[in-house]
Length: 301
Image (cartoon, rainbow, N blue to C red; front, side, top):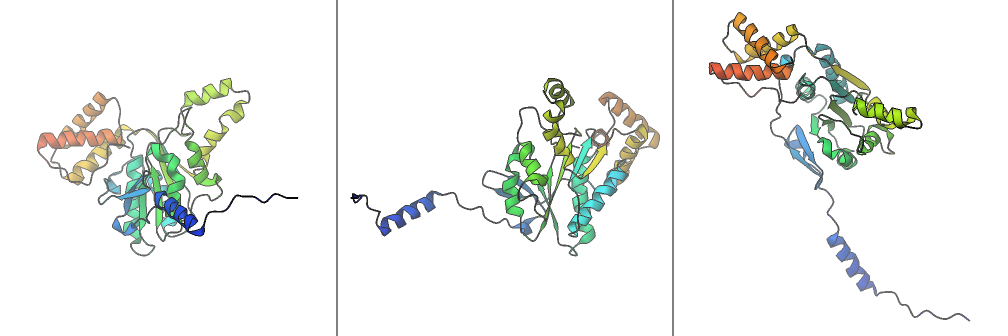
């Protein structure tokens, strides 16, 4: 003989009130971004917000000297992507101050200027290094929209205790959903393998299986199909950068004076790069009372 349970279900109106209360306290779904507001955005993971950038701080591509080969490769890759053709994620790695991030921004503007309305506007979205773990959420906002996006992370690298690289790895290729068809990822780094050499060597020396110990992290850089190396510039390339800025901004200075002072400036800094060339131009223009226009490179490279 079975005992009849005394437990009764809540009345339908009680269930409805519970459901309504849960709906009120649930976080609202992120609003669809209005991509017509700008050609560039910055990703803020708190609130799933894309902040429009009305005016991007970038340099004209003609002023990026000494990197012609990598410029042409990145420009061609980006244009193919903007046209809806197959293209690779790109890792720009190498010497500091040689124009890695400047090139990404210049290429974005160059492709939009070249294609106009033929392939629609290409959007640039910057994600900060510390927000890499939120990449899947960003991909969810971009997936299926009519625009095409270059998602850009500047100065990307990881240390021994950092596991956020797994989010990037999943988006690049390894996840179930993978990278959306309308998104490509560009990153800059001073490290070819995105982690310090001493960390790689330490893991090799202490691991039971050295080959497998760092395979997961090293394979991350392998998932960027396009590797573009930036190397320290020669004296002639450095002087060419300086001359390009002088011509662009119309700074009246004698050639022999310009050469002497530019080399002295590089010697005091202990390096030659596009960043050092621009810093010299700022000093020179200031001493000569020449105003520089806003078409200038950012200080990171």
